[in-house]
Each structure stands twice: as structure tokens, then as C-alpha cells.
Image (tube, rainbow, N blue to C red; front, top):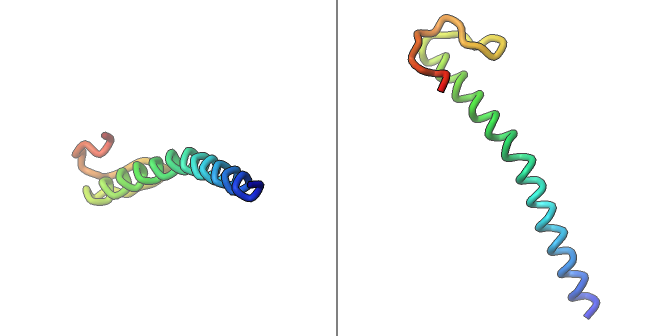
Length: 64
């Protein structure tokens, strides 16, 4: 019986750890994806990505 309770506790701990990791990683991954999208849009329109800004690109709505 003690082993079953120990396994249940480990399962709960594992689920909580996975939830914490997902809660931390989701905003980081979202931010990276948005930055990559802006950077690639800038470069596709002939611009250069410097200091988190697009310079020299034609204005095609990359700031969405």
C-alpha cells in the first residue's frame, strides 16, 4: 500500500513539474516565434534587422 501511495505522489509531483515548465516555456517560445516572424518579414522585403528594428524595407505591414 505504501508503494502505491508513493507512486501516486510521484505522479502528482511530475504533473505539477510539467505544468510549471510549460507555463514558463510557453511565453519564451511565443516571443521567439514573434521575433523570428518580424525578422523574416523585414528581410523578405529587402530590409536589415538591427537593434530589434527593421531598416530599409518597403512598408508591407510587418509590424502586425
